[in-house]
Every structure is written in C-alpha cells, then in structure tokens.
Image (cartoon, rainbow, N blue to C red; front, side, top):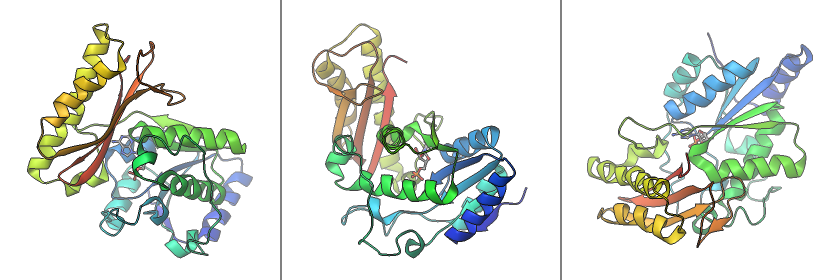
Length: 285
Ligand code: AMP
C-alpha cells in the first residue's frame, strides 16, 4: 500500500475532510520520527481501529529546552516512510516548523497546569507545554477521531488524556503498551545515541523496575523502600545519573512518598552516558 506524504497543513485538512464526508474515521499517530517497533505498534493499532491512518513526523522544537538535544535528535524521513508504509498508513504528515509555528515562539500555547510540572516536567520546564500545544495543532489539522500514544511516555499520555477532557476535544486518546527490546531496554529513538557500554548499563532501568515490582509483589507497600530497590540497581552503573524515580497513582499521577495503595506505577528518568532515558512499570501488573 502506498503512503501519501503530505507537508502542507491545508492539504491534510482537505484530505481528511473528504474522507470524513464519506463517513470515514480518522486515526492520528503523532511521532517525532526515527521510527521503531514502538511507533509501529501504534500505527498497526490505528490501522485496525480506523478507516484512515495519519502518522505525523515532526521533531517539535517547542518541547525541547535550550540545552536539550533538538539539533541532534535523529532524523531519517526515507526510513520512516518505509516503516509507515509497511504498517499500512494512508498519510505521512511531515510539516515544517514554519507550518506549525507560523509566528515562531510568539505562539498560542496550550498548557495543562500542575500535571505538567511534576516528574519529567520538573527537570524539563516547558516540555509538556510544547507537547500539548503541538498535539492540539495536530488534532485540529487532522480532525482525528482517535489519537494513539504509547505508555512509554506515560506522563505525556496522562496529560493528553486530561487535555482532551478539559478542552472537550472530540477525539479519543488511545494508550498502547510500552514495547521493549528482548533484553528489556525500552525502544526509543534516542537509543541510537547510546554507546555499547551505555546501552549495556541502560539495561539497569528495566532491571531496577523489575526489582521494585518483585518487592511490591512480595508485599512491600513502602514507597521509599520500593524506590530504593530500583535506585540501588541503577546507581550501581557508573554512567547512570538518576533524574527521578517515583511511585504514583496510574490514573492521576499523584506521587506517593509513604504507603502505596494496591494500584501503583513506578516512573523514572535517568541519563545514561549523557542520553536521557525514561521508563516505567506497573508494580501491580
Ligand atoms: P516519539 O517519536 O518518541 O515522540 O514517540 C511518538 C509516540 O510513540 C509516543 O506516543 C510514544 O509514547 C510512542 N512510543 C515511543 N517509544 C515507544 C515504545 N517503546 N513503546 C510504545 N510506544 C512508544
């Protein structure tokens, strides 16, 4: 199946309008490109559920801080097109920065309060404002009935669910499970920047989460003990620099610092050899 590349927002709007007029449902899969099996799982889910599948490929500058890796974020449009085509998407939307931000930084912003300031939001101020703003634009342009996001970016998924509810967007957010390599490393476009040594040490993230999960399943309900289990595993790796490890409510992301309830998720962010990685796991799962 051939995937159409569309670069112009108006052209995409026209395309989806025609599809909607004939009663078709639209599924949107927003990505920053350099696609892998994690992205593919979202595209396949959209393919199953929707008549028209639009994948967006846009490295969104407004979700990167000034000292972050916007300039070096990996890009490969031709490889992305091949993957998207193999998953049966109808459209690969590749807008320019000028298309999505016609007034540059002097933009209209969408911001989810509070939820965007904890966890990753604490170490990346403004990050989630960039995410919610660009996803709002993409939802408007694509008129999506369903938008697919991975649980890999669990806080992002939670924030987008809140945003859609708060703004009354006529779109349903669909969350999909985190996809890992066979050895446990969470798939991420940034993994390409890991040296062999850093990649090996990055496996401690998954091992740390598993240690915490085991402790939880053996009856531990103390947040600090659970966090220490993961921290001990990860901090034994010389290249690992922990940004945060927290346990939280899987729906609200309320952070627990003493006793944890029956349903709990552990979330973490760690720089390994200078590459910022995030991961998470349900401890009750
Ligand atoms: P990104 O291109 O990293 O911004 O990710 C685009 C979408 O793919 C987001 O909804 C991510 O949560 C999702 N995604 C990225 N990596 C994975 C993964 N390993 N498993 C599942 N979904 C993922």
